[in-house]
Length: 165
Image (cartoon, rainbow, N blue to C red; front, side):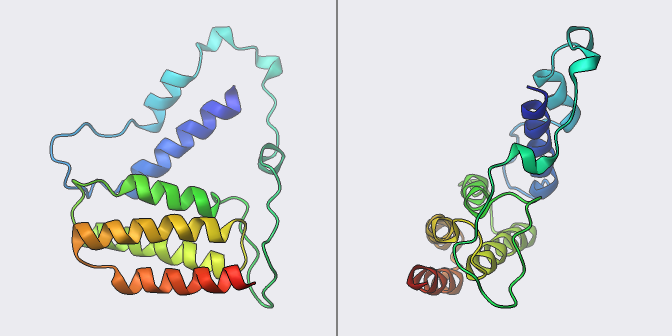
């Protein structure tokens, strides 16, 4: 339970960091801070046993990721990062209809896009699945912001190459 709460708290903190408060959401409530999430998710300190709180290494909590294929000279997938499909799904959830094409939002989208496409090219775990989600996101970016055709084309080319391997 401690690991789940810490993971959710960390995810909330990451989203607060990446959101950069650059959305055009107007009066919507701000995301919870790490401390607020921890307070909501963690039981009172007196309810926890201090002797049972041992921490396992990060890799022990995650199933192993195997490469889809090997590319000579490609970097190994960083296991301390979220998986490519999870990153693509977060990007899909991040792109709300109220989020406008500000410079910060475009940089965020392009950075996440480039990470997913590069990871899939390197043969990282479930890259084809992530690219399919990313293509869906790119189509939404095109319809909402009027940009993204070239990014979608790059994702489609990469998907074809990944599926061929």
